[in-house]
Length: 485
Image (cartoon, rainbow, N blue to C red; front, side, top):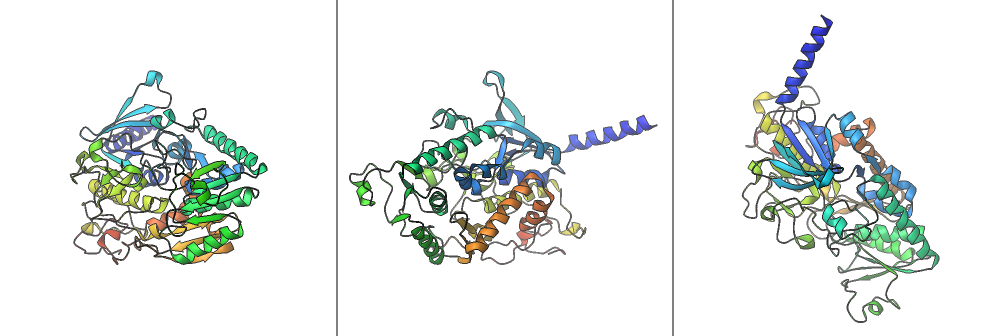
């Protein structure tokens, strides 16, 4: 009898798994992990990533000046995905995506003879991110590991394989000792770009390597780009105190005669770090769905108001079941203004795409109170928006100072500096540690961050309450609210 029961139970589980729709998630960063967490209960999820580890990108600058910090920012993802979420992880690079046949060609990490594997899917979520150096052929920079095959072919550090966590660690250690040697020589370093990455990098260098002669430049009239003047002034004064020489309203053009003397330097700097702009890395997508223009020369995935991939003429691609979220996409200007390529809006978009899939398959999550409002449930895809969280920026000024901007919009100079000094430092540390814990599947991190996105209060910025805000997916598109909302 016991054997019979075991057999029946196994048979039921097998049928249940066989009936599930297959979801392919490309990328294991912030957005990809959110998709896996929210879909694994009702779908067969496979996550593909070209590297074996998760990296908390907003904190990686600190690791270069303090290598021991790297361990607090990273972990290998296979155990988290397969043991905690029970989804499949494939370590490899997606080479092509076929929207007509709903398949992906993947080159596994340890494939023999460069062979490719074909994965079929019912839905696909592209969460592949982007690179951070528009001056490099493939956008290679210190701020994101070089993991794509086309990037590794032209890499400035070909001896390091950053698809492995130890390869990434070795790169960080090498750069640290290079900086240490330059500090001993009292070398001159130029940071090109005074956005929040450039400001953070310059102040980290000034604190940990005080003998360096640091210069920072930007084309705009102040640091922090379009953020509020009060925050820009605060950061500028902090850099003044650290001895960082600032020059604004100038382009980075090292080939121009007398360029260095115009910046107040005696000669060409010993080392230059480019900290401006982004560059697309959607090498696996067909040209018809990639933008011809945009940051870094274009190459971004076109999406509509539902985050469905489209071609250049706004025709839905991939039967409307392929979504691109976060840093890899580009919305049409007449629908949504450009969204900052940071983690919060990426996760918010991921949740919107997840809800569209859940709606299509009628796999509705239960509300926190356990109530179900079946008669209000919608099956139409969910519209996205410019989320208010896209206007939050926490900028470190070394380990002992920081500032936090809230409420920024696409308008220049918008937002408010609401926190600074030690309180902002503590806030940033809490965000970092709890966010990494959530991505690891830790209880405390999930308890904190789950409700950041999964609530009714995250409305389109400046648009008030929307029928698309409902976390239960129950509101209709005609504006009628469900009982929960």
